[in-house]
Image (cartoon, rainbow, N blue to C red):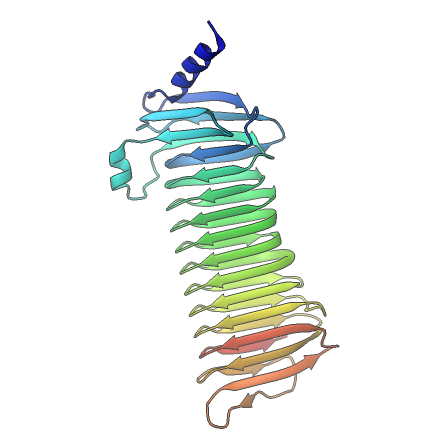
Length: 317
């Protein structure tokens, strides 16, 4: 039997329809492929990066599996589970059913993972793009360029470093011990980030609340429309750049220790500035009920800007 015939039979075996809830335990070498693509509509999925060069799929397939593909396609190794078309048309986001799989893959290979309603736990991540609709992401331990996005699912992330982007529309985002270039963004979901470090950090939300606690920022940007923005810092060093802004949401900047910065806080009509870091009193507009505050603390090396249209701004020690 020649090599082409063997390859053809193997490919057929990997994409042929499988029995419902069938157990699977398969492996393939990464070979000359340079990325891993995974598409599993629903279930409970564990993704684990390894130092090896093999992709391994273990566990139980979805009870409604129509076809399961595990093969190299061009420059990628593909893991794909297909459900009947009727499920995609009527999917209500219920992921109580579905595949229960653990997938090991080479951490150094870029990963693209897509799902509709799976809850995903991932650890030892390398470079990755993760997409979800209604399921949650639980991410732990990795160092690379990573983007995770959901529509209504929540995202929790811990011990990640690199260029990180976590995005959800209506779900919440919770981060612990993240470092590098960080971007956390929601529309109506809340954001909570603690023990963060890094060269640049951005928090954005429309109507959700955002809360940040960290030691000392280098470059920090926070934006909200109507949500509340709370930032707790241990200190503000002379090289820091901090810019926090809202439309109608309130902003609180609390600093426990030393501040070495020029601070400007400014509101539009209806907004207020409360200064608890010095004795200086905010200035009120003569003809418009806006308020502003300009102070220099320490050597004034850093830059802090707080701005709102109609919300309240508070500086607190």
